[in-house]
Amino acid sequence: MSDYDAQKDGFESYNVAIAANRARLLQERCPAAKRVVVIGNCELYLGDCTKILPSIGSVGAVVTDPPFGMSFQSNFRGVKHEKIANDSTSDLLRWVCEQEADHAKYVFCRWDNLFEIPKPKSLVTWVKNNWSMGDLEHEHARQTEVAAFYPGPDHFFPKGRPQDVIRAPRTGNEFHPTEKPVQLMMAFVEWTSGKVLDPFMGSGTTGIACAKLGRPFIGMELHEPYFDIACERIRKAYSQPDMFVSQAKAPQPKQEALL
Ligand SMILES: C[S@@+](CC[C@H](N)C(=O)[O-])C[C@H]1O[C@@H](n2cnc3c(N)ncnc32)[C@H](O)[C@@H]1O
Image (cartoon, rainbow, N blue to C red; front, side, top):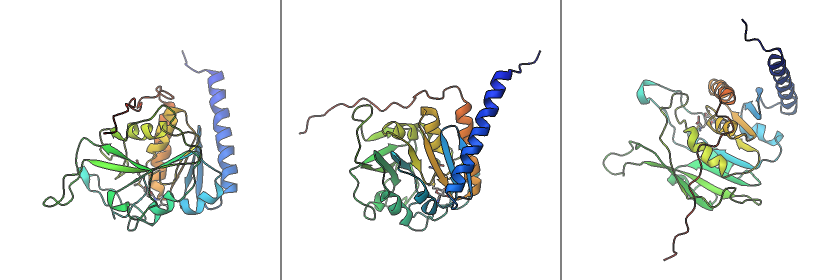
């Protein structure tokens, strides 16, 4: 006996046609994009975000992990990824910190970028389950990364005041040399409101977090192989059963004494 369900099949075909039509309209509005793909509530643009962004309307939040001047090339665990584009300076990091978002911006960077970007309101620290190599003789083994936090004009904490530390195990960088854990990006997305923008989406981790949380997402990526990986991972996230289920709840805030 066949499992064919004519109503489900018809509904899926209808959704595919609507998504293709939306992608075509967005592409017309944004000639700087080499390709536009719509998956569920995610609009994904292939191309240079500095050229694409002027065609996009206002967003609620920016949650992003831009190139920040490390000239990073990974060879971790034998997976040799290509060099990250535009990673020789901190120009794009500074650029994204200066973009507008109504609710909030969370921008990953290194501690030594703090002198090059607009002063954030605070930093959120990601504590990993491993540490980076760096200078083995004269640098502490670094177990953390930071994101600069910029509240926008409409900022509020959607689920109460969160702590500024998140613990999440690192990934094995299967899809991207600086791949962030989905659980980590879900925590950031849950601290924001409105449409989320990641202009440097890499393998699409912020988009997956949004798909799982039922949040609208705009993603951009310059490098076509990473763009294709992002499309594939976001498509999978939409088809998985835990969609719209919040897993990475921010810890309950506890007010400490001032002194
Ligand atoms: C640090 S990685 C982001 C990785 C991502 N967080 C993940 O989990 O996969 C930054 C990404 O920005 C992309 N990129 C660099 N310059 C860009 C530009 N001008 N426009 C769009 N993407 C760009 C790089 O190709 C790279 O994939």
